Picture 1 (cartoon, each protein chain N blue to C red):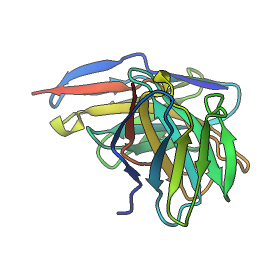
Picture 2 (cartoon, each protein chain N blue to C red):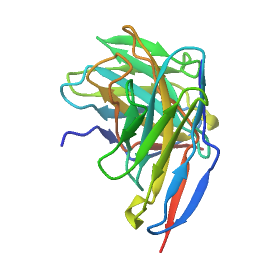
Picture 3 (cartoon, rainbow over the protein chains, first blue to last red):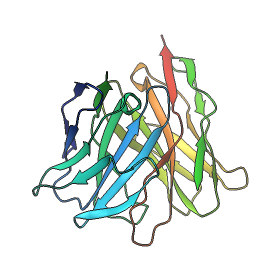
Length: 115
Length: 116
């Protein structure tokens, strides 16, 4: 069964450093998403991406975040200058449509720790 | 904006006993409703969803959820749980979307602990 994969599974970085989290969505999917979950808190939507541009974004997704689909398979989330409060589990998801009713398929997550 | 409340952060249940995980939501617009499950060291997986029609929806592994519009609830139930049901369960909503790709709005999750 096709699945969403994410690398790395864990990343430790110093405050102020740039990090890139990588995701490989399901191959025939067209919509891509990033979510994060700070320890003990809710899973929060960050951004959605369709047709090589951002479709929707939340208030959390400020100028220090960016997303990219650099080739036909990868979908990345970049955090330009990490802060302590960026420590969280980051989930990538993909879906074949953007109607609201379709299932979003999630990857296993990348745990980011900012020191 | 939408919000989801899962009242119980942890629910311990004995094996083969019934369980109910509660979920209430708030939204000014119509939404679709979802339950996702996260097993240890895995991503979130869709368990079931309510889109329209019959208010009772069922999953293939014995879970069911009932949409109650007047109480804005979507509680998840299983008549008899198994050790393998131990996981984190997330309730989520998503507004009807005409062409954008809104994200899901999640509750904080309920950790279902099955005791032998």
